[in-house]
Amino acid sequence: MMIKDLRNVSRVVLALDLTESKRYWDIMSELRGLVKIVKVSWVTLLTIGPDGLRKLISDNRDVYFLMDAKLADVGFINNVIAGKLKELGVHGIIVHGFIGKFNMPNVSGLDLLVLASMTSGGELYDVNFERMINIIKEINAAGAIIGGNKPDLIRRARSYLGNDYVILSPGIGAQGVKPGCAIAHGADFEIVGRAIYESSNVRESFIKIEEESRRARCT
Image (cartoon, rainbow, N blue to C red; front, top):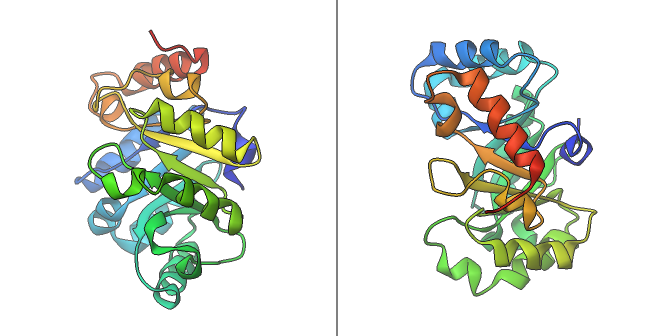
């Protein structure tokens, strides 16, 4: 399962950074048949453990799981971590772009998403933005992570990358970016967490945000 093949399936990536183990299964149950891409993180791994993550993935075999690892070590260690995460069943991982192309992990069958610009701070990223995007092309990564509150950078990345690479944008909902805005500027997917899992009706919230994201408007 590759993330670029899911462009026409869903526009919303559900971010699950929960500190209660049971809620992972509760939310996935509520969203069964709707959610197609889930972003998990070190919070997930520290909450449910490796066995829990493996079970969460095996219980939802039709869902693409992206691990927000933000790897930032030397190549050897990054490869070890990426390989271990793949063994747990994840389909893709996020890596810091500033480590450079020679430290990027290379694990067969595992999507690599390169963090090219953060939603807050990360000023060293933005002054080196074109270099980050070039690295994505040089290593043939799956795509880029660019904050949804930076539409100018999303547009620049799309012009550099064309349609061969995906762009995922966090910061939607709780961080202030309206659903559909990032996609209107060229992103493929919008990453949404709290606006869904902290709502009173998780299923209705997901459906509404998915519809807004698909409309790709920014008003």
